Image (cartoon, rainbow, N blue to C red):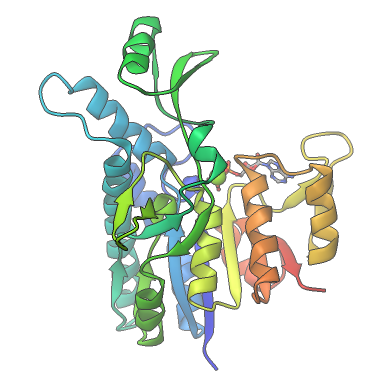
Length: 312
Ligand code: ADP
Ligand code: MG
């Protein structure tokens, strides 16, 4: 029986804190990030890779903002697709170069992914996710006139968009087939493109973003993975995070984790969606979730670091 894993790369896989995010920095980081993926593939894992896109889509939105007098600005959904393409290309090339060095002949394919959301999702009428560049007061008024929602933050105004719950991945069946054929797939990057199903069965894009961890979970369900590996910038999941009472979780059962989730240990927008993804994955048949630092992915898989979340 082949072992299947979905690997979710956090923002720090591509842009480190304090970096400007030049393409050279991003490629250098990506080359490092794919090393442990190559190790997993060598060990016989079939993998689907997914990733965040916060800094990249922020940069694309800023480029659109600055250049809008020269060339038409693209809507958010298109910017998400652009970021999925650019990041997918980097991972695709870095991973396939690294595999070739190890004489592993496996195709690596990045796929633009659409994810169905419910058109009655409450977040669609109540956008709360801040994205993209900061705007001054005048620009914020302009944006409001153009129909965008903006909120004031300490450094200026930001656009807020809905972040609906992903239901299922349109290309899920195809991704599973590719995986079963031995193809390494990069999919649902940046959470994928949120779409709704029209009455005629067609799809329409939305001005929204999907959380990448929740999308990773749907991906893991779609390909029937046994492992969901969530790689980020902390070594482990903690209770009472960043307080004197902080407590490390190294191995935890689903039941216990649910209790801590309900107690509010994991904030929305960072650890919250990772834990929710873990709960949903194990409840829908997944075997194991590991949350670990991206630099220590391999060690985490051996049980030396990271937080292991299992059914019981
Ligand atoms: P990613 O790009 O990997 O999704 P996020 O910033 O969204 O990164 O999530 C990781 C962050 O979650 C960590 O840097 C950490 O500061 C934060 N975090 C919040 N609560 C916890 C917790 N209970 N345990 C560990 N990390 C936490
Ligand atoms: Mg995140």
